[in-house]
Image (cartoon, rainbow, N blue to C red):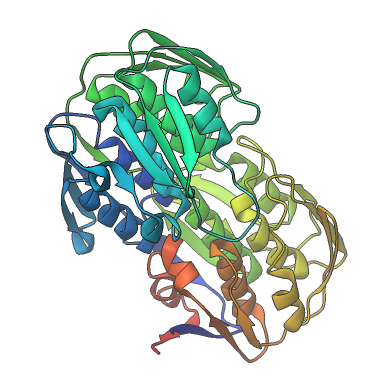
Length: 424
């Protein structure tokens, strides 16, 4: 099993090109099931989760021409409804490794009238049910049954409905948008997720011929159409990857241009970086981050967009260990997202967790150690900690990193980090 080895103490300076957004790419690839004909996506990140989605689409009968080196992917869905259970089923073997596999459910039911998906897996960061997906599909006329660990959904043609989400859910909103795009009549989703990736999906569906308005607001309206057309589209840059490298620049007192990063997608992240003392400026090529001479304590509460993203909580915890004083972090999205705390503790961090709240007493220099990655963003936080720790840090189980960061060690090495991947 591969590991990442980091030797701390280097100041980062230079440019890092931000890859396409994982959380935008996955629903867009699933949306390729909807139109008749082949859709082509550019700026597709070279990630394990993207490869898994490709395997799933092939299993569903799609022709998938993936060219990871060129960041291209062409997907042509089957022209006729799939025959046989296996051709409309997302099996456990694939879904258990990536929760986003559930995103094929809405398109399958909308296009072919039937979808069967294993209950999802993914990172062990807490319960992430799909009840809002199923609530919405049921409101649109679908028959939903759960048995043997699978969700089976069928409907000859979905019909528009008024759906009020109990909580804003990104994948739930995306699944329902894709399903409603081919439904008969109008669908209104209230308390909708507002993330940039939801807006991106709406943009692409509209390019296909859908009629969606309100994406990025709490109320999304979809006027169903009879068919959609294939498109070509370049995926937006990854705001979480950009945020992770922004923290890397800040903690190393560096000066890094995040090429392609979109500041308008990162308002909450930028605000907290500035509160911590970093200088963050928008430039023509992206976003420049300069680290402060002294990191300031900063309090954070994770919230749905446009609040501070839960996917940046672990990285900012490392930033907080650098500050002289106490920072308070409150995680409100997932109940089990502090699993990186004991690993940071092995490196000397002084962090106390009480329920949803983590108190970080910073100012104590971290020391290198062997640490274990527990989920995608926790993995990134341990790499960041290694950048500023004394001596060498070994980050084990880096397959988590490969799910969401494209060649993170190469990108960091390109701006001066002493970091390498050691093959098993």
